[in-house]
Amino acid sequence: MTVMLDDVRAAAGRIGRHARQTPVLTVEIDGRAVTFKLEQFQVTGSFKFRGALNALLARGAAATPVVATPVVATPVVATPVFAASGGNHGLGVAAAARLRGLPAVVYLPHGTPEAKSSRIAAAGARVVHHGRRYAEAESAARAEAARSDGIYLHAYDDPAVIAGQGTIGLEIAAQAPECDAVVAAVGGGGLAAGLGVALGPAQTLVAVEPDHCDCLHAAFAAGGPTDAPVDSVAASALGASRAGGLPFALLRACHVRLAKVSDQEIIRARDRLWEELRLAVEPAAAVPFAAWLADRVPGRHACLVICGANTAWQPA
Ligand SMILES: Cc1ncc(COP(=O)(O)O)c(C=O)c1O
Image 1 (tube, rainbow, N blue to C red):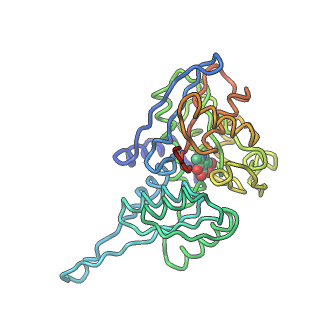
Image 2 (cartoon, protein in one colour):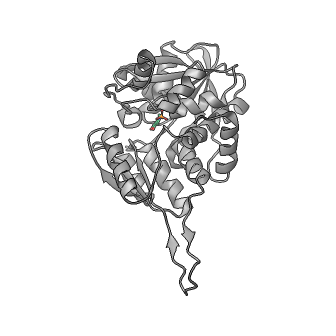
Image 3 (cartoon, helix red, strand yellow):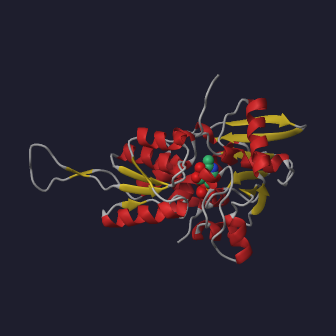
């Protein structure tokens, strides 16, 4: 099982009618040019909608009318879709399932920000809080999916999800060909892996993790995915305790560069995005900018993926 450039191109064709092509913004900061891929403008407020929608469309999943017995009201068979999430994947799944006419059930760990859980419920999904970590929510979601003959949609270790996230890379290649590095935050590695498949050799991929929330670094150190601690201000988005097997294999094959940032650097970067550019984002989305500000990104001109903005906003 792998993901190829053609899979990403096919994903772009599938999701194009519903997903937005998000804009890029090039500015000068601290005397250096930098480009932001504004994926917080994606439907649902994060890139996760791309992967979830591609996965449901690729499986042909849709509520199917039952036509065997001619009756006045045609019953509809709707396969439920299950997901476990720190919030953004759940939101993507809820919106994609609704588009397909399918019921969605999203398992979230306790402590998921209200800004995320309330939006998932508003998108029509049943929300179940379970466990303290993403991994615990995942086991419970898988078990209920198996009991109910539902679809389980993994947040990052799924080829169709990775191909969907990779469509961001196709857009960057067309919108910002001058960029020689593309930088993304890592949870379980699906976003970075999709970018790695989509980008050409002229654009170095840099995958950034918070300190103490660094399962991809742990995977590279161990030679394969392994459990790692989860403790960061960005944990609700990047809190996978184990990198996906498929993302790891794809990232190793594309010679990804790795970097880490501290919580303090993430918060500082998030605040600068607001103060200097009026970009209001969640902590995970500031992770690439934090690495860039700390000079941990190679090349002359980087493109930083602003991956999500599902955070509380309280205007004064
Ligand atoms: C805002 C945001 N950025 C990045 C990621 C990391 O994505 P992945 O798990 O595919 O590495 C997530 C995951 O939920 C996210 O919500």
